[in-house]
Image 1 (cartoon, rainbow, N blue to C red):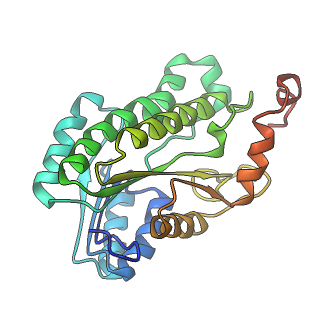
Image 2 (cartoon, helix red, strand yellow):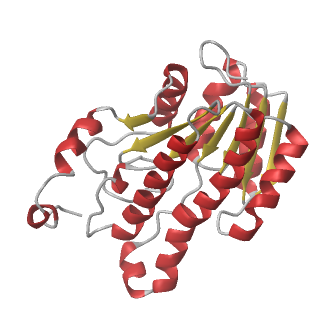
Length: 253
């Protein structure tokens, strides 16, 4: 179980090859997290992430197959993972697809892939996992959302709306779990400089996978329900979400 200072001893990551997830695991394992299960699409990135967790000192570090778009298979996936590894103190929901707004506006199938991966698929997986957490009577579910979901801009409304849906779902799920011993923490990073955004011009107040990981760990330790990275974005979006629509639509891409 998560100890008195907020340190989990076991973690399941949905989207185990995510840079933010790997940075978070790199901070959790030296702090007594002994079991690391990385769920994702099979490939070199996932294998390398497992190797890194082992090198950091995890007693158990394994990869399991997971596809966020396989909605029908999420219940069986959760059953298999919890039956095999037992209780999890922490589940991190880190899978996601940035997509290409210009292409998606012309191709509804591409847009649907982003929406399914980032919202519908993950929502279904979270329900399956939350059922097991509820039955074990403890645990933390950490969801990597985005400030892009606070208010969708015309330049990225497909991605932004997918994160808005995930964020709202996570809030409702967290409320439904009150009193069960399970808590949900939503993480809202700004522009993260990394593999997913390579070649893009950073937005104001950019951050890094390592900084997000620090915020995740600190949020777990303090029992936070919502975390902004960097923290100043909490106040920036407290204003921006209320801008008149005529002003908002002129926001630069």
